[in-house]
Amino acid sequence: MQPPDSAADIRDVNIRYHDGAAADYDAKWGIDWGDVGSDQVLGKVRRALGRELPAFGRSLEIGAGTGYFSLHLLRAGVVAEASCTDISQGMIDALQANAQRLGLTVDAQVAEAERLPFPDASFDLVLGHAVLHHLPDLEAAFAEFHRVLKPGGVLVFAGEPSRTGDRLATVPKVTATALAPLWRRAMRASPARPGQSDGGAANHELERHVDVHAFTPGQLDDLARTAGFDDVRITGEELLANWFGWTNRALESTAVPEEIPNAWRQYAFRGYLALKGLDERLLEGRLPAGIFYNLLLSARRP
Image (tube, rainbow, N blue to C red):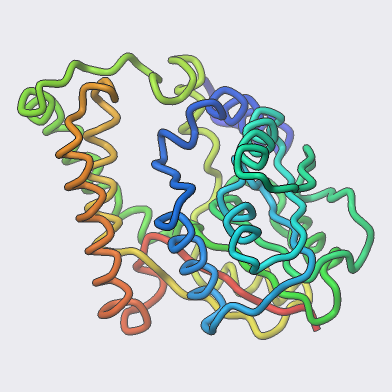
């Protein structure tokens, strides 16, 4: 498949990939709906803002996927009312199923970030996680975020790949791929079928075409300020945890999931959390934001 070369192609590839991946998305990424997941979501929003979490009235999540951020924010009482958009109907269906299972009510609909179906000044908070790098027209999207926020409203995006961090992450990925046969032998796990966790081999082929941006902190800052935001804050998160996590994720992606021992999963999970805590205590705020894997953005509409 040729890489998408137009905005329409980028949207089409993202719709097809995320529709195909929706059913297994939570399992693939280890999304947790308990206390661990809540701590992760609230911690990311708190670090993006650089302060304790306020209470928001009405929120809008862009590219909400299966609802990980909005549903946790609703459960924690950080937002009183949540709306969610995604270009994938499959993801919206999965989000609604998660909301129903958790006993939550959320307005979820298919929509493009560059053309939001909401009136001006509708929301107190606009947020997203790992979505900006999928959008073909970032300038139009940021203009929409500004338009639908109330004056004084807050913008928060987390989980956006930094350009340098993304390049550094190729090292553990390549290393893990080379070691995967030995690792599977040690785990007594069979090789996975191509695309097993992505909705099949055809859908798996789409995955490498859905990410169209990796950012420098300056680029995110410029996008927000050009759209009219102020109090722009860009920070980084996950360095050691990222290298550890990508190594393990790359290894695990090569094996049949049901055959990976629980002891390994516990090691990978606890090790990731330990290194994430080390990143937060010792590295974040002391090293340049651009070398971390993820960038976080917060800003305010005047």
